[in-house]
Length: 235
Image 1 (cartoon, rainbow, N blue to C red):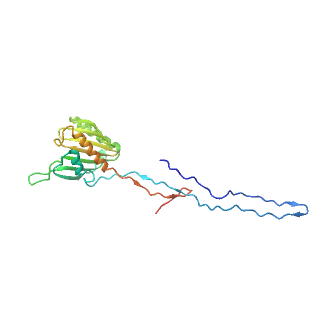
Image 2 (image 1 turned 45 degrees about the vertical axis):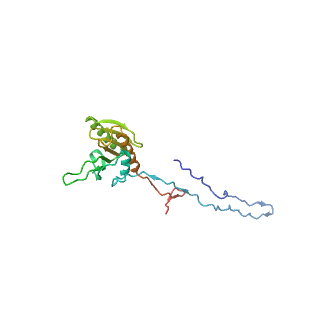
Image 3 (image 1 turned 90 degrees about the horizontal axis):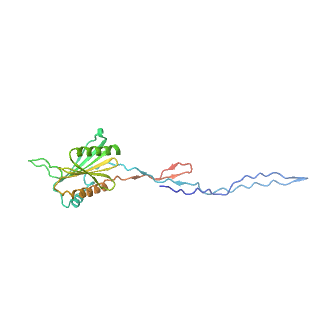
């Protein structure tokens, strides 16, 4: 964006220097005229306002599941409520693959009982962060290659603002979306929806997640700049 600065105005009249010589006449000499000083300028020194700058948004992994995906959004996309509870877990970094963090939200988890442990989630959302965009893209490529080698079906998916793929296997359908240096994985077990209903539901839910999890940019305070270029901070 081009910032238009107001033109610099220099107040006051033009200054000049008059050289007055003595006129010598025969038998007499006239008085020397008094030099006339140029009027002083009363205009203030021009200043310009420094434009506000927007810092790059800083992303931090959420500390819970409610800010990523609500139960109401899940019910709307699937057309049915999921039984069970929501479970949140935080993973660890894996420097060998450039991963800096991970969180996982399990929805529809049957709680543990005296006879059995907790069940697997019916819908699972994970968010991964990486050192840079290339590390995130490389990890997705490696995952797709490994899944295809096991017979999992690969399809392109459509999620606004992200690069997305859909992996469909006998155990689950997984939508993977990449935004910059972070990757989102959303998996649904078979039986909740049929084969034609699963992809649009996952794409709708992933859109909800990305809309809720976008980092907020921060705006730096603007100041006044003097003609010399220095900036005066504002209160």
